[in-house]
Length: 72
Image (tube, rainbow, N blue to C red):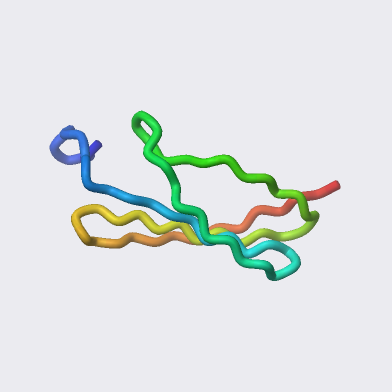
């Protein structure tokens, strides 16, 4: 939903690039799910994961990064 207008956004896509602790890369196209994007994945390695999430709306891309640590 567009925060300014309140209208539903119909032409958006999203993907996430995951860098595993072993430095393996995985790119996942996220699926539209009601009012958000999502997909299932397993974080099977212990250690720090790096995520880069990209959302494209009307041809304009916005990207953010974050880190998540899996501990035993």
